[in-house]
Image (cartoon, rainbow, N blue to C red):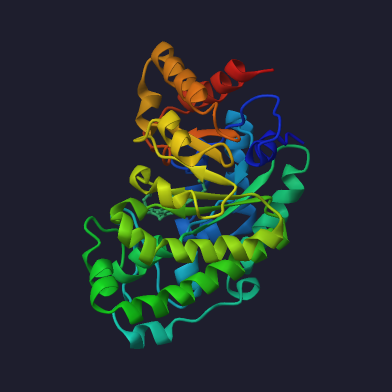
Amino acid sequence: MNTNFLRACKGEAVDHTPIWIMRQAGRYLPDYHKVRGKVTFLELCKTPELACEVTLQPVDILGVDAAILFSDILVTPEAMGMDLEFQEKRGPVLPHPVRSQADVDKLIVPDPTDKLGYVMDTIRLLRKELAQKVPLIGFCGAPFTLATYMIEGGSSKSFFETKKMMYAAPEIYANMMDKVTDSVISYLQAQAEAGAQALQVFDSWAGALALCDFEEFALPYVKRIINALKPAGVPLIYFANNGATLLEKTKTCGADVLGLDWRVQIEEAVKIIGPDIAVQGNLDPCALLLPEDKLEKRIQRILDGAKGAKGHIFNLGHGILPETPPEKAKFVVDTVHRLTAK
Ligand code: CP3
């Protein structure tokens, strides 16, 4: 088993800098389309054999140092009782958004082994398949990011309805966030029990918040999750996308690893974060379209910039784009391994 990823999370010595890629199982891979052509996205998530198959694809094709469970952050709100659809052009749609205390009252805190049992089945299958290969990462959405989808009813640009609830009805917002947080905690605990060897909390929209709002309306819930998961004994990764302005606060969240998007210079981030937390990131997903010599220079700069951190896991600064040639993703993996081989 290649344990470089797990060792880097803990700041231990590695044979080479480990790399995995956010959204590494997905639409840029022809092999993914082959499977996805037969079922809807949610059916794919809910069929353990198929979810397992697409999770393994990037491990075999790219040679990454970790697998990430194939699923979606929005299965949590669905398990809480919300309707969820993925529409080809619009992405996720939750047709009955949460706008009132009555809507919050309708949400349940699900038993994950019941409502999300298919995820645990996928994890158990994956651990068998991955036994001699690489560790498996489980994940969830952070409460604030989940709240944006639940309140807006889908993707959003300004997050108007979410912020309106935060500012005008803070008790309703807090009641909802308590339920989301409790749901996420038991979901991650169940993932760890089923065999997930690391857990990442995706806060994709944290960067939409002013620092004071992040501190009041998002961070406390992330801290609750991380505190509750510490006893599970697996590395915890917190990724606040577009979070350069939040680093002074995110570094207090308690995670073993902080994910960094590409907008921040990694050495500047490490200066703020300090030597006691590992970092993950942070190549611009669009940089994969650079010619190979320029791409290699960008990779080297990131590797150099991360040197002051407790550990470094190479990754993109956000999900790989569907337009990316798979050979370029493979080039990044091979280059990180070659440049850092001990
Ligand atoms: O990283 C991986 O390979 C694991 C799988 C994974 C998916 N979604 C599969 C997916 C993970 C970790 C996620 C997390 C997720 N989902 C996030 C957080 C990460 C981020 O990107 O910020 C968010 C915000 C979502 C919500 C979501 N799911 C949106 C907005 C969309 C539509 C936009 C898009 O990229 O298609 C999805 C759909 C989705 N999730 C797809 C995949 C492979 C595409 C579905 C398809 O096959 O059509």
